[in-house]
Length: 381
Image (tube, rainbow, N blue to C red; front, side):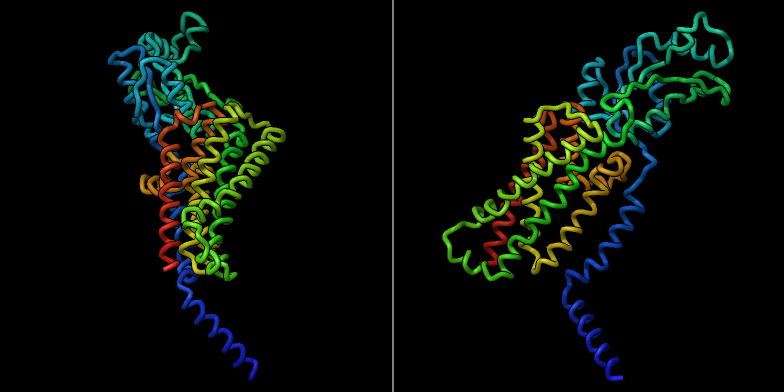
């Protein structure tokens, strides 16, 4: 009986301590809630409204009707118009669109032949029979996006041509760039760099200031002439080398074991990687100035890591998420880095051509350092 009383006392003590630790109690509630919301609403493998472009070489009423017919499928959404195929391919490489529909000049004649084949009338030659109505140029590095657009290959033009609903014949030719074999490793390995760096870089620095406080070193730092911004920079610079080593290991093994190509310049890759490492380390420092203990810093790291894995485009296509989830994803450094590293590694894009993501990471780093420095000064007071 006395053992039960002692056990009850320990249980009450732990519950009281948990109640006082608001951060831990909040994580107990928030982590399952956030995961439920992410998987229930944000994660969507049924992709819709993929941003694509069009090169309309025909510029006829029939080509415009064809664009409207494709839009009606709700699989893609035409956001850009290009004058030539070269500009369209450059836009795909920069990540501005995920695919481009190229409508040839003779689309009217092709539609007539397509209708003849659909009605069972033999064409004049096998070559004309096999000619598609138009062509899709697709960024094949994302296998889910590529699979969704490949599904339009045999899209029936029933309303446009008046064909019977049961007559489905190939309509579009699909050309897959950057990953024509549709190997999952080509898409996963570069994204894995972003996820691992997010986890390790934030984890390393999220406990930096907390650890100094728990070890009693904070008073010593206060008495030194070092400035807050200098302390913040000194905390993150050593871990930059660790991040570089991790990137070399991941991409090196990805190339040697899974045959993942590195098409871009190593200098461009280094620039993008260092920018992201700085942003992640800065985020860890901000967490470190907020957390009261190393346990809280770990909990807050997990709080950032879960959305970074699920919303950054690493596992699920960014374009398939609801607009609210995309807003959250845009606030995460991992989202911008995964775009950058896939652009450099797979599509041979220069970092300067992806200005939005570069600017966002640089701005995030500067603002994060300022916030961490200001919070550290506040703690000193």
